[in-house]
Length: 259
Image (cartoon, rainbow, N blue to C red; front, side, top):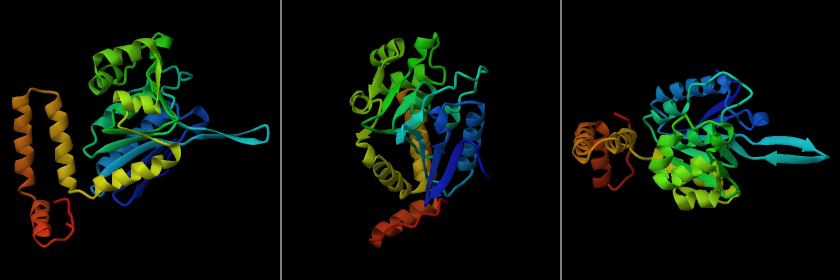
């Protein structure tokens, strides 16, 4: 199935989603939000996908006889569309497999909130991330007021949200907003190497680890430990657990079935 504003491809066990509205800096309108949710639903039903990467296409224009490239993940909610848009960040956060945001250029407002909904954020040094909604009399309503404090701490999050200030790629990594910042030319190679490393692990294990950590983070230690034991009990009853033991004993790489 073709999409107007999203490109989806599978690279081995990695699902790659590219926001593709470059003339609008991948600003999120109702079409992009709907198509992104449809792709996420497709990914969630594909057991072959073990890791997901989300990125954005750059804007390329010819100006004064020169090619002008403006890199962007997403400039956020498209303010030219007056109607409210249901957040696509929540369906991303609900994915059972690890999700990596690959940010090259701007990730602003709703674009930054989509990145925050991912498990990992990798950025290029030339990126700029932030939640400038306060400058339009708004607040980041796609999870920004909740996810940013959990990532960088309450005081730093309040400062970013209340001022609308942006963080460059290296600063984002220093304050914990991003996990890794690398030169632009190294970004895709770095992200895909990490995505493929994750995808090489036991698929059921990946899902259960993410579930246990996410559920445990929203509760007390005792309840979180119960979630952990439930996940462990489930995994010890899988074929992949038996394969993992056999591969260890036979000194070979495991062949996972996701069963």
